[in-house]
Amino acid sequence: MAENAIEEAPRTREAASRNPFLRLWTFLKEVLVELRKVVTPTRKELIRYTLVVLVFVVFMMLLVSGLDLLFGSLVGWVFGDLPMFGLGG
Image (tube, rainbow, N blue to C red; front, side):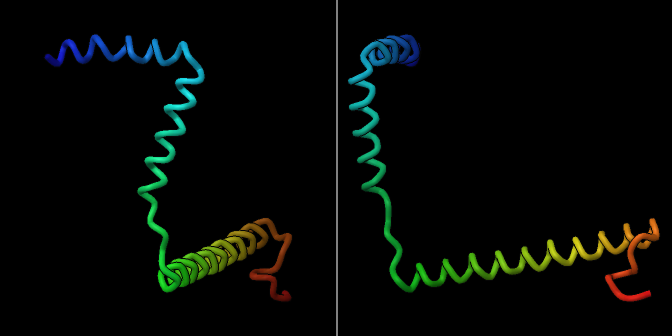
């Protein structure tokens, strides 16, 4: 039984691949099926998700900025070009 299914699958794919309109129609039907599965968040969920994303982005900006300042200062200190942490000296 499983062998027949495996053997028949390529034939149906080949038949569908020959007709571009059939492939387009099949694609559009699958898109509609997937769109029916989409769940729209409530206003409260949308605000919560937005705040979570914004907090994460701000945190990552601070982390990257801090690491940039640290490594830039260390490189400047090692090579003698810049004072440590941008402070006079």
